[in-house]
Each structure stands twice: as structure tokens, then as C-alpha cells.
Figure: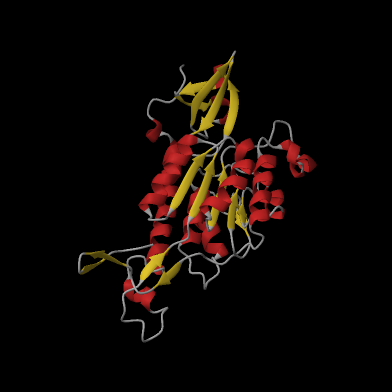
Length: 300
């Protein structure tokens, strides 16, 4: 067994696919490939997976992910990303015949895992969401937000990475931040975001990872957070919510049931509060001037 190998844990029935990140004596440090989970396990408990796409766990994740991506595409259609007449309906009658442009909400995405960040940025790009991604350790996120929020002025902040309930913590222990690997770091970062913008409709904050302290994240100022039932969440669940927020009109609240059930993890993995969207349209469409000729160009 080598660093970077794909493995599953025998004692857990191979429920989650991991990549070996580090060896410590007879223990291995593991990072989930699809779920935001950081774990350790005895090397003897691990089994190398040579064909990850053939595992039941991977197939189930792919089905759920495809369903979520289809929901995002339908959201784009509803919010007129590729349907000008639909967007024009939100303008006055006299403006409806004029060219308009679209301004989806801008995202600042902080991620404790560089592989997940890369996948997240690929999805933002594919869905045409303006996004700035930063890889940082969870303990550095509060200080990073303090510096970056005034500079980037995003509409939506995603604060995520790795988390999890520490071993042998149950019952009342689950309401203590000391029972989690990184929930306290996420809470610290959310508080900085709320010091910058107190209005939850002014700045949408999406925070948490696998098994995070859902209640503490909401109380510290998140609009959406994980994980109500302390379950594993998919790596792209925070991204899905950010995209929905980016493409929901500023006139409309984000549909809570739709956005939560649209995630791969569902209502046990993600929850939130009523929040207005960040998508805007404007007119007239900006033009690029070249000599004496004006040429239309897209914007947003």
C-alpha cells in the first residue's frame, strides 16, 4: 500500500472511498474522495481499490451527483441563463424589447482540501458562476476572511474543508464544539464574515463539512450549514447551494426545500434559513468600442 492509493475500510463494509494521505506507524490518514471526511484507520483494516468506479459506494454517489447537477441545470433554465425572454419578463414592458445582461452572485470559496477546491472551481466554471477559490487550512480561514472580504466583496462565501466528530463522542457531547475536528475553526470564520456584513441577505454564508456542528454554525451567522444529523456530506454540496444562491433572483427567496433536497446529502446533511437570492439582470448590455464601431458582448 502506497501514498495516494484508493482504499476502503473493511470494518465499515467499504462504505466510503478514501485516498491515503499519510502514514503514521501502523495507521493511515485518509481523505474521502467524494465525501468531506478526514479519518484514520489501521493499515490492516484497509483494502486497496483498483477499480473505484465499480464499487457500489461510487456508483451510488455518481447517481446522486448526476441528479443534483440536473437540478442545477433546471435552475439555470428557470432563471433564464440561456433564455432571454424569460429574464426580460422581469423587466418593464418598455424594457422587454431591449438587450439585457446577467449578473450572477459572486462567490468566495475557502476550502481546506485542494482536491475538493479544484473540483469545486471546475463546477463553478461549468455553470458560469463568478468565483474566487482559496485553499487554506481550516485554522487560517478566519484571518484570511478578515483580509479578503473587503478586497473581493463577494455576494456568497463558502467556508468548508474537513471536519468530523471525534471518536467516542455521543449524546450531549455532540453539542460541544470541542467534540469536532474543525467546527470551532468554521465558527470563527463565520463570525468574521458576520462582522464584515451583519445582514444575512447582504452576504450569504455557507459553512461546514462532514458531521459539522450545524447548530453552532447557524447561531454564529451562517445562512446554510452542515450537518443536522452529523452525517457525511458530499464534497460538492456547499458548491451546489452556492450556485443556487448565485442564480436565484434578488427578488426571490431561495427555495429551502428545493435547495436542501437538491443536495446529494439531503436534509440530514445540510440545513439553512430563509435567504434572498443574488442574481440580477441589467440593461442595456455593455458594448465594446472599436474605432467607430460598437460591438455587443455578454456580461455577468
